[in-house]
Image (cartoon, rainbow, N blue to C red; front, side):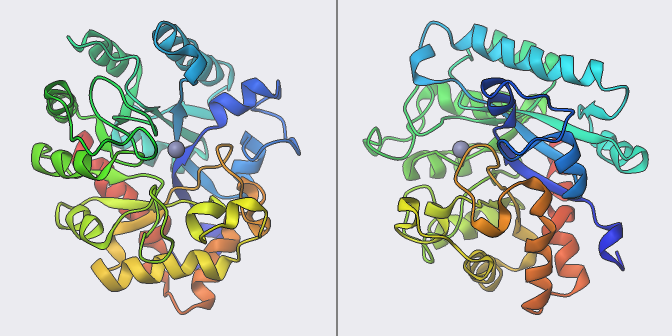
Length: 323
Ligand SMILES: [Zn+2]
């Protein structure tokens, strides 16, 4: 990569599938509502993104499966109606095709495994429908694991949770530990034979929030070839920022610097949380993403480092897990 115009980015987490539906906007038309639609992804040079399926508390437990299928259907319908401008990413080479075609690659992700049954039939069928990335939990508990926050009783993965990790390994589904509690994290590290990611979590040493990772967790992710995606949510960047205080791009890069000093540039990437969190004013929607890339450049990161952060680290992990 020699110029910004040649940059294409991979973003490890967004909740736009839910928000676009909730706000009744079209994914294909530029809006000032929310953070993500196809025109704003193009302006933001985002070529591929993890698109999360999230189940609301109100829909648990009985409507988890139907809400999951409705959301998957929504994404697949968008792909069908897109005239080739949106591609469901099912294999590694699809990412390269997106770059060549200028299409947007949607990577199907479940943010929490509530829809998955103990016999893993739904996992196998979900894989056939395009599932390529799975977070065992959101910030709550289920039959597989415990999330961070008030439901965290300090327990690790259940027997079924460990089996879920093994099944994901076999199917080539990426395992995501964002929202997982610390005990569960270490069980995933012990159980998984593939690299794992924290798709949208920051460094706890910089911002002491339960959703962020301790240094020993970051080292363990890196040792196994994984990565963490920098989350743009204000409260995960600066302590107490959720209450309204803005957060600067510099504060975001403090997290990148910390992770790079700890484990090098190969294990940090993008994980915006667009349409799922309150963004810094500078990054008010997906079209603004190149501002973060420029801010990294201004702080001394060279082309090689920026390319790794912007896409190559994600490409490396996805290639490893999917093939
Ligand atoms: Zn999340």
